[in-house]
Image (cartoon, rainbow, N blue to C red):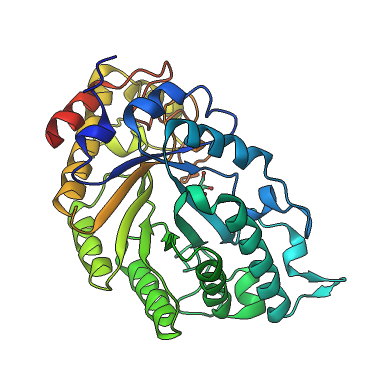
Length: 355
Ligand code: GLA
């Protein structure tokens, strides 16, 4: 392969190009990672349920596999999402059959942070310390707080669990950048909550270096809101990482493109036909990626990394996740590389645009 044909090299003057990988697929992606990426994120392997399934019993095999590859390729790791309402085993909130008090939860977060940092600090340049703690507009997500998600952490500790997590990570990983990470981050109502969460954290004297903007797209991006969001978050004095970028093929649909509506007979086949991954359809996906990267480049003074949530279409969480129950679950072909690990045609345009 032509060594000059590289996303990471083309974008060196703007920001890092990252990919989320799993311990199961990282081996199969080694060539693509070496050619195109200079940041790696373990997709699930650093979460609590994977690294500490029972209190004090640490399981690092899966994460180690990714770190081994990263070291071999000379790529530093964006470590992802220990303190999160998902993928956290029940022991975190349990005290011998009774609800764990906040102090015990903070001790556990502290011990966990220490163990992870001691093992991985040398290869980690940034942490998503807390993930998705602001509530969204999903029914039941608010739980009484105008800002915070109604999670087990929040119910037990109030918002202080966020500060506790940042303090511990700062203690054990003083050299890595510390991020708060969330989704729907360009939605104006959610954005206000994220801003409030960050302001509160700063008022408590916590070190937070950056905001992770997940950037999962299931509908056409609102490019103006994206720009506005970047500006608002940057005005808080934060560095920005795009942390989980993917564009589902369904986001390329334009008004009026479907002649049947959800629920009508034959809708699923019709949708599958309209959204078949033809060169024309994939070039519409490419148009969205090109526009997004154009915006990211124009804010490269505040954006340091753009990570796609996966590498190629053969392994993507969107094969198992459907945000819209009215729509059938179908393959979304969201990544920059095909199922055969070939760059999609628009990757050449993404590279050319940066040179
Ligand atoms: C969220 C999390 C990620 C991952 C995705 C689904 O965005 O931040 O860690 O679990 O959901 O793959």
